[in-house]
Image 1: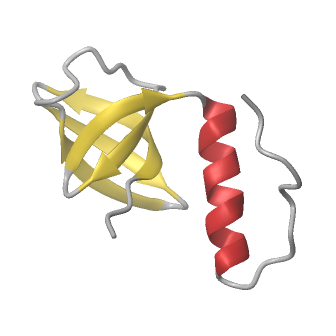
Image 2 (image 1 turned 90 degrees about the horizontal axis):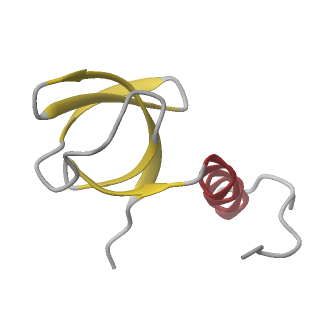
Length: 80
């Protein structure tokens, strides 16, 4: 199973974005998502930004991943 995780773009240098997720910073390629901007939330998989996502969707994903690791349930229903 493959899993893409949301991260916030904090800096862009050419086709490379610097993203942050839970205090961890990484470099990812923007080759597949050249229109990403600083402040956007993107799904990251295998070092590539794959698609933009809304901040609320990123927060829901973070909560669900935390729940999988034993955190208390905070998401009761997924929204459209």
